Length: 183
Image 1 (cartoon, rainbow, N blue to C red):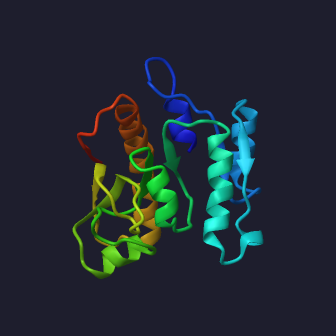
Image 2: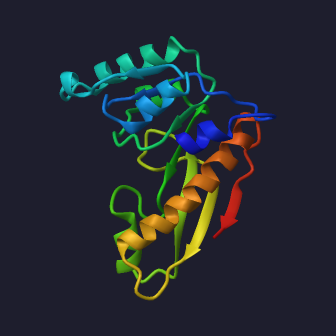
């Protein structure tokens, strides 16, 4: 989130209007407040298993700030079709694998277990299907001998901070051609 906000200057077509989290203790909330960006917290826990009610509260918070684009960053909750359809074509996410490989969790360990020679991250439009949707960009890194999941995660994070801002810049300007980076 911070890399996205810090890139939204100058000729960038986007500007941050809200940082929203389901966790009041998320570091991005305090940082955004310090930057003068509006923040909202919608805690999922009071909603229990009622995802539609939680998502209605998320939508209400979002609509109050009228975003043109929603960028998910570290939001670890699966969104339902009702929510994703309402924001279709305006919501993007970053995932730490070269989609369509390794949807879900533990992507770095899974890449190592599979003996992959390269790994990376993907920015994609969000749909109701987990870690699916049109690919807007990927950054690739080599898997090195002796890599651990933690080592891969660290190197992929560097690429995430390059890729996501580059994709958002193009997406905000109406460009959908995928961005491909190597690191």
